[in-house]
Length: 459
Image (tube, rainbow, N blue to C red; front, side):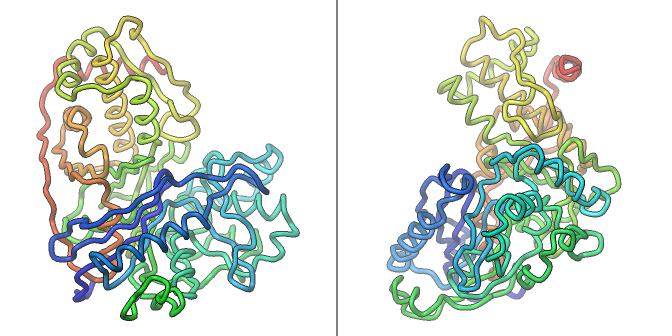
């Protein structure tokens, strides 16, 4: 990347749970201003869909406020994956942006199963709901043919927001390559599904995540109170945004555990030859267009559910409860959030938790999350240190357990999320190393036997 002289970069960061606008200082890497709101789906209409107009209003209000103080010189964008925007000829949405957690009728799912390419072509596993963008497009085209006939352009989700700001339409590889079924990572081209769905002519041109697609449209700039032309960069899938800072300055092999609603695991320096699609292992495509072995489970959502059930717990007390929990054989089995992860089809249950304290339940929940992460890392043949970023980087109990289970150093990067920092790098600024906490693997008595029993309990 060529270094640029931008001092401050605004990042529109739309996650599945929350949307935010962040201003980053390029000299320190610090988030010097953050505004956020929940990302809530609308349940009415053709199908459940994202409230893009509310998100757009939020983005404009936030950018207007942040343009006054602290100010920004460029805009970058990152969003969750598994979403596409379908535009009409006038550039407006032809159909709502579907919520990927919507489940389709069985006959449509069965038809799509017959249509989709093999894993050997796409390295994209067959996922539940609309987690394959190809399944979304097939559903929209099949169930709503009149509406779909009005579609003139298909965009990946981050690039929809870039298009609203600049008027320039594009698709981008990290979003095309995140389990969409639409991309062939070995060939570096669209998969056969694009022609089976007869949508090749609708797909917007592919641009690099690092491209400045245009400047903020004059009328929007005036609304925001911008005093100079501000470039907008193409944008990137959020998990790949988290990965990007590590690709810039770390030597492979290493693993990145990117935590948010999803826990996405990247085995940088690994190969694609041993991935098991039935266990949610796949290839993502990084910002440079390279395939990266990956695995995932909905760990952030699961921890949110567990935390609400358990209630607040002091971290030191939770760590102190690890030994008693292991000694009692108290455990939590997958899956709390069904439909994804390394143990498909399993129904969550507690073992030995009838008389458990809150501290013990919290320790058992962290054991569960660490065991799930360890399993995911094993599926992708991850090697080298394990870098944890996002909310789980603040969970000392989880980090200690993960280091012990993997037998490898864990490096925690505190902060709300790495997605905004990664997206800011698209503008060409130099990465700034933040604070890291290094956790060496320690021997936790009984943990290896506990892991064996945990796997056995799923049989």
